[in-house]
Image 1 (cartoon, rainbow, N blue to C red):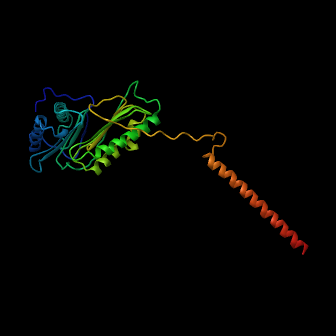
Image 2: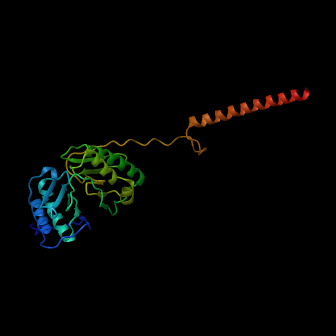
Image 3: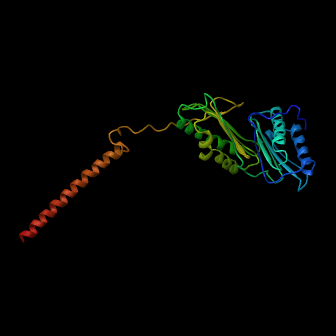
Amino acid sequence: MNVSSAQIADDFRKSCASIGNFTANSAYDANLNRLFFQLSSNQDFNNGFYNMSVGQSPDKVNAIALCRGDKNVSVCISCLKNNTYALRQTCPKNKEAIGWSEFCTLRYSNRQIYGIMEIDPTAELWRTGDSSTPSDADVFYQTLSFLLKNLSTRAAAGGPNFKWATGMTVTPEKIFAIVQCTPDLSQQNCSACLEKAMADEKMRTYCYNKTGCRILQPSCNLRYEIGQFFDGEYVTVDVPSSPPPPEGNENNPNQKSGVAAEGSNATRTIIISVVASVIASLVGNLSLILCI
């Protein structure tokens, strides 16, 4: 592989699995080099998804590569070339590794990985700086959650060749987002993968109160920003407005609505009337008994 123009991107993230190592000049090493060469020179775009295997067991290398859905073949191949170089530098002897960068994901292993939904390992990136915090974190998070769930449904239904969706919200917050699965996943598994990526345990830990964030998993990923960062068409998602707060509750914090409060007063009135009638009846009966 020609690495003269390859480089490790600033946003490159990787995970080197500890399931086993290989030695230099071994059969596995040779197969991995062949796979990298084929990947970096493959002009068959296939919607930016590649599934390759080189060699025979136990030295067989399986690989999956996924480019971002809005990028063309030249951008895709350039990104994959950089990722192969970066993984060779950062995971030099690992039989299994994964590398993420802005426009592509590359993973390889000596085990079967095609068609298997995997959510670990995970990498996270988030925006920092002056514009990194929304004005109202709760409203922003609620709007974002609605947008991502909508796009997740669209991406999962994308068919066997392309599971990708882009969209934005205008109110109450302006947010742009993308979600993507590897197309070898079923609709159900794509939904499950994105659901894990959008789970509160990840989003609130890494993305809450951030105007830009990425969650990267082996089988799917998501990203959002307050400005458009992707090419092509997108859907505008209308976020339902939250119901207004109840009126007239200032003097009674336990009052849930005017109807409920009126019902409560009426109930108390009826109970008092009934109790008064019962007491009067008992007094009358007691007087009658004493007279007898």
